[in-house]
Image (cartoon, rainbow, N blue to C red; front, side, top):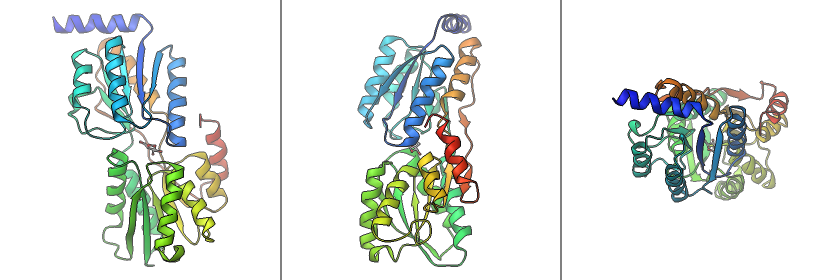
Length: 312
Ligand code: AHR
């Protein structure tokens, strides 16, 4: 009976234009804004009616949005969860209403039977790639690193910190001397970097900056320049995302390396939903996107131009 009811529900959803609720975190970074643009584009191309909700960085707004989507009876929910914990009740309510939820770009601590699938990168691996680049670049040289962390309690902040530490583990010449959140924003990246520079002999004692996203790094390089130092050479800059502004700075020699995170999480999510709506096909619990390292050797000017056409 369950199979018949499910098949009827799938074909009913497939027959009419589907409505999908998207609870987005906010617009803290260029990457996030691009993800929003691409999700809207992808929905339009597929004839999906997308209900967009901007949570302005607040989990309570995301939970309220999920509840509103459930009350409206949407066909699916996309959730980019601002932090990792505290989602059980809202996800259970969606599950009870038989509304599939797909996580975008960040993970939650809830049981994975509360969502259909998660689309995103291996966030620990991203940190490992960034740390591995630094290990290879500095060799035996002593290197004091400052770290700009992402939003406290978010899965990328937790995992990118872990991954970087995994990579430098065993390399006693590399040491993280200061670490603070910049909340994934350009303005806080600059502000926190100013305090790092002040505390580290005007920046003379800093060898490298590791930022959990490109926007914080772009803010930080402004602070480095204002302190009279050259980002990219006096202080190495490695981050994650691959946004155009970071590549523009890289082309000018002011940043060194970034690990790309695609902002097109919605494409794979809508593909998974299409198959699920058609005949109940269950996607894997994790649909992993690629994490590619880009350095100054990878045509940063060309990468900047290519990205400008991609929804950024
Ligand atoms: O969850 C992905 C991260 O969130 C991106 O790296 C960052 O730019 C964004 O705000």
